[in-house]
Structures are given as structure tokens and as C-alpha cells.
Image 1 (cartoon, rainbow, N blue to C red):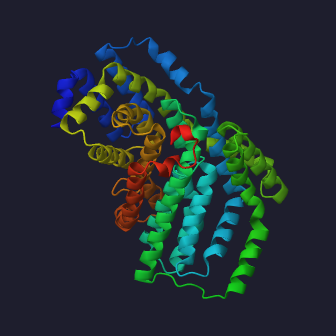
Image 2: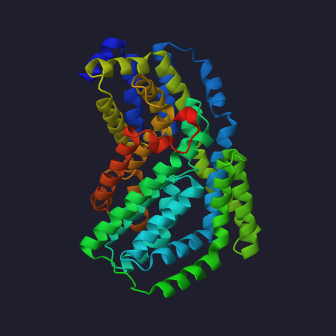
Image 3: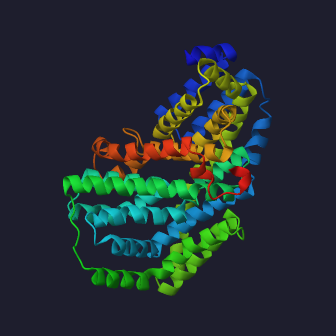
Length: 442
């Protein structure tokens, strides 16, 4: 019904269908996503003739010629330096000291360190890989089944794009023309709520299944252990402290915060003796590879999004949906379903660049605040990262451990449920995402 209405409102012919089929086929054949998007964009521009092909080169370079995007490689590099210098283990030590008195203490520490790592790297896959290497074996030793331990890390790593600073918020801010700093502030409470939902889910499951028991230490002993952990690793928290204080006070742009974090992390590595000049080539190459995946996707997604807009697809989508129902609650649920499904099968960057311009007019139609829409979109895409059976984080931890993706996916279902509840809260209660913002956004 929805598809028939869309066809009636917008004349969708083979100039639309063939490029979409081409994109699906290329992805199925294992062609890189950026190349699949690029080929589809060129095919759609040529076949539809709504935009001259001569604009392709200009669109590619203008799309990534943005100062805000400079923050992306800086945060990626910061996360890489954090792991190589051993500072990420300081986060784990403090998180473990905070929770070692409770039942499920190390599981809770794993979730917390995922959040701490997210507050620096801005990437969920990087967080899943880094935290997974440190914690999965220890979780198994503590009594957790390996598939569940993998699911816990995969769920915790979803906060990589949900807790600021986040690469995803930088990109959606660029696409929709919204300040990344504003989005960072808006995302703080929702990101913490998602982290809390994962933490609570693990505590509930652990109590029911008795995977891990607390150390049953006294308050004085717990305080002493916490003091030792903080004394030995307090300096690691300077990095997220600088990022948050700089951005939220307005003294730093996200790019400046990323640059400062890189410099501070490198200096710490030299002072601790865990970083050498010989480490730089491999460290820079590793970060460049990650950045080299993100930027081409952005570059080729933008002309595709422009072509879709010129063909009237976003407007046609809004007309099609609202002609079936104008109930804002149902429309919000539809958007969430689309985003979770998209996040399940494709990486965040192309989803944002392609879907944000299509869904934003629908959000405007129901008078949803643009900040609330952005936070809802990124959160729903984050849920898709552990949505069985194709969530990206599931494959990351499966690659680390060799555990079956389907087994991990089955254990991830409770986390998906509770994260979805938070997503619905964000979608239907605007103040969750606008509480920390100026009055203009409330």
C-alpha cells in the first residue's frame, strides 16, 4: 500500500529501480559500500537526467570540504592512541574498582568501560574491538557463557555513536546543517540512558542466571581499592574531561577538541613510556584505513541524496506516508522501524547521508524538533548494530572470538528490547534530548 502510494505521488520508473537493484547486487557481491553507492548515484543521475553528470565531481569534493569533518580522523586517531598507550586499561581498572562489590561486577565494569571509551573514540566498531580484546576472556573466566559475554560487549559498544563525541552526530549535523556541538549536548542524556539500560539489563540477567557473584567486600576495602585505581589512572580521564569541558563550555569546536585530545593522549603516552616514535607509522596507517572507509561513503552518498531530492523522493515519501495515516505516534514508530532495519544491514554513515534527508521532512510534517529527530535517528541506528541477525557489532565480536554470530545474536535480544524502550522514550518525550539545550530548542 505504501509503495503503491509512493509510485502514484512520484513517477518512479526504471531510472529509480535499476540503480537501487544495482546497489543491492553490488553489496551482495561484496563490493565496497562506497563503490556501490557511487555506481548507483552515477546510474541514477544518467538515467533520470534530473541533474547533469558534470555536477558529480563538484558534489563529491564540496561534500567533504567541510571543517567539521576534520574532527572525524582526529577522534579515530585519539581512540587508536588510547589503546596503544594502555590508557584504555586505566578506564577498565577504575570501572572494575567501582563495581567489584556488586554481583555481576565485572560485567557492569565492561559496560562502563564501553561508555568511557565511547566518550573519546566516537566509533562503535572500534569500541567493540578494543573493549572486547580486554574483557571477553575475563568475562568467561568470571562465569559468563562466551556468547553472552560477546553480546554484552557488542551492546555496550553501541554507545560509541550514542555518547558524545560521536562521529555519527558530526555527519548528521553536516548533512542537515545543525551544529555538531549542539547535537553533542543533546545526545549526552540519551546516551547515558542507553548505557544505563544495558547496565540494568546485565544486572537483571546476571541475578536470574547467577553468572557472576560479587566479591562481598566491605565498604572500607572497596573504598581503598577504588582509591588505588583512581590514583593509578586518574590522568586517563583528562582526555574525556578536556573533550567534554571544551565542547560544552563553548571554548572548543568538535574539531579543536579532537585535536587537543590527540595531542594530550600522545604526550601521556610518551610520559608513560608506552608510546614510541616507531609506533607512529602503524598507528597513523591504522587510523587512515578507518577514515578512508568513512569519507568516500560520505562523498558518494551526497550526490545520491541530491539526485533523490531532485526526483522528489523525500517529498513523495512524506505524501505517501501521511496519506495512509496522519497519526504522529504511528509515523514515529514507522521511522524507528525503518532506521533499525537500515542500521541492521548497513553502516551508520550511508544510512545518515541517504535517510536523513528523506525522513527529516516527515519529522517536520509532524512538528518534531530537529534536534530530537537527530537524536532519535542516531539512537535507532545504534540499536540496529546489535539487531539479530545482521548487526555490525555482532560480526565484530564474532571475528574477535570465533563465536557464532547467531549464538551472539540470540543473547543480544534482551539488550535490544531495553535499548528500544529508551529509543521510544527519546522519540515520544522531547525533553529527554532538549533538556541541556538553550530555550530555542526546547
